[in-house]
Amino acid sequence: MSEAKKILDKLNNDYRKLHQEYEELFWVSYMGDQSVDDRKDKALSARDAFKSDAKLLKVTQNLWSRAKGKTKERLQVWIDFFNQNQMSPEARELKFKIDSLESAIAKKRANRTEGYVNPETNEFTVASSLKMRTMMRTHSDEKVRKVCFEALEKLALDHVDDYVEIVRLRNQFAKNQGYEDFYDYKLQNEDKMTKKELFSLFDNIAEKTKSTFIEIRELAKKKPGLRKPWNFAYCMTGDFTKEEDPYFQFDQAIDRWGRSFAALGIDFNNGNLKLDLLDRKGKWGNGFCHWPKLVHFKDNKIQPGSSNFTCNVVSGQIGSGSLGYNTLFHEGGHAAHFLNCKQKDVCLNHEYAPMTAGWAETHSMFLDTMFSSIEWKMRYAKDVLGKTYPFELFEQKEKKLNILSPMRMLSIIFVCSFEREVYELKNPTADKIISIAKKNYRRYYYMTEDSVSVLGIPHLYAWDSACAYHGYGLATIALSQWREYFYKKYGYIVDNPKIGKEMRKMWELGASKDFKECIKLATGKKLSSSAVIKEITMSYETTIRRSKTRLKKMKSVRLYEKPVKLNAAISMVHGKKEISNNKISFEDMASKYAKWIRSMG
Image (cartoon, rainbow, N blue to C red; front, side):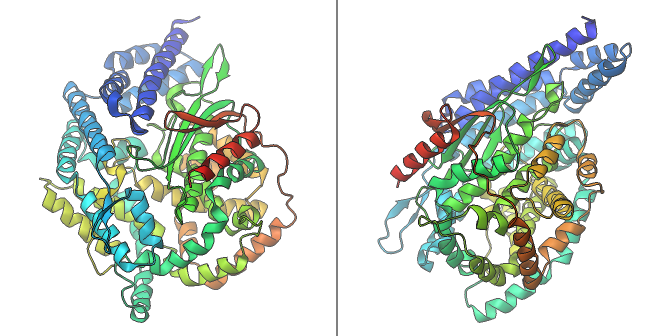
């Protein structure tokens, strides 16, 4: 074996082991056991030290100058990887301080008391942030909705002083690395975009959808109190959330998710999956997917990876089941993506740079968008009596909520604009950050009351997700373009194995191509916001006509009735307890998990 190939093997093995050690501790900590945090931070520091090792960069550069063919290409991958992650000794020290502070915040968030003061009894009622956000959408009593809003506003300010310090340290790190600020560092280093390039896309979308706020203002004249932040979601969607809830009982989620993925032709490439789906105290308050064991090669044979993913379903709560389905499809999409990467070098087979947030989120959001489509609902969503989700409910919902179509995208731009302004502060303080939070809330939500809700978003407090929310926006643009391509080519998406086949080809590329290249390869066109603007500004009448056309196309597509084979060893867990697995069959696992969910109430 040549010296270059020996070095490549060592790089892959060393990095893979460092990655796995950190990720396994990360999962334990984020699932509620913070006793491992010191070990986790040290493991992360060790992984960072490898990624930024100047000696390894020099070794690969020297070998590259003598190498040829595929070996030369693979050495270039590692040269680019090391270059992208170089840190000065000062920057490395700052990064460790930041990691330690983030862990301390995560521990505080996991152990804090969450809840609201009951307006009737004046007594404190324990409730998670997730539960209170759901109550704001579904509870019929405005007084309860308001106290939930007030409690969430207070919780959002719990760590504002810590956030000021994080912003200061992250900016110090970014400037040490030669960037304007931390947002500039994340965007250019990971997404290869400038702030001007990104926000010109976002500003164009905001400009094309500003009529939304005029329509909301007119609607508020007929519905007093609509624009109060604790009323808006309930007044607009509360009744529909209740009407839809019977069709999205969470005990059926695993079965429906598995059959949908199998029908689409998705499998997990012999990987291991661990799913932890219910909310509990101490657990991280946001769904995510990570990969402790990366897909890699041994003796030129591909070795499967592993994936852990989670969401925070509040069992039995109206509206929570549907959110759980959405997260299950979203994080399941992430899992399928990275377990199907097939690059020889592991640094191309994970969610970290050089993988971009925009491209990673395109796949997960593509699948949660499929779940939310009327085609999926009328095919899979049934109540306990077997009644199918009614098209009439979709029509009623679309008629009322069509004006809100741009809001998902605007809510993403809201977070991005907030973070950009925060990191552009010369001297960040709590008062300045709170002011920016309120200003952007007024701009993108058009409510009668200010809110600091953005400071409650978990993404802000973790290095990997901070200043990366634009990934959801870029993915929304990309998936609209991809969905348009698929509908024109095949006429339908749900239960279409040709879709899964095309997606799998893109998954195999890992991070070997950048975001814009991938969009061009997937759709045959350059990245453009035209498809997403068309989608979110479509009239009610056009939406209904289009939906009927798509449903008509689906009539000739047979239901997936074969045993579910996802090519994965799956374990359903709740914390450290395994509830069920698919050793006997997927159906056996889903049945046992459904029984357990029902026992939870």
